Length: 160
Image 1 (tube, one colour):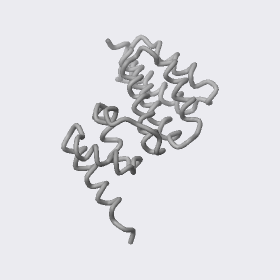
Image 2 (image 1 turned 45 degrees about the vertical axis):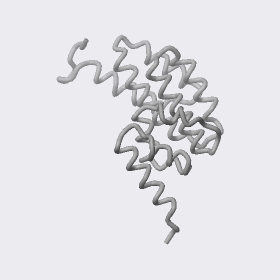
Image 3 (image 1 turned 120 degrees about the horizontal axis):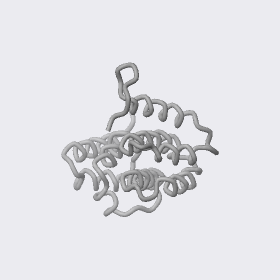
């Protein structure tokens, strides 16, 4: 579904860009309300794309912050019932658990999405030999397995 054209682009493109700008600048106290507002947009796919972009940026910034669990819980309540967004939040929480050397389950790691496994191996967030070894052995794609193997090898190398 596309709306009226503005400057040669569909209205959804303008709303998406507007949402990204607003989400990037939103004060923390107003974030949940703005995410809920975006998710009420008539174009659900566009709205979820804007929100997942926001979740990715915000989670990456908060990953090592003690505020992450409360933020993730709040966002989960706002996006609840939207499987894609809920899964992304759950995977950011798993990524944080591994990065912070907190408990995690091998089944969660091997069942995680391609996005998660690529992010875990290429963003250099995870340094856990156990997690990297598991991804090197049982990652979903050859790309993930190779990246995890390379990361493990680099971690084994003494600094120059």
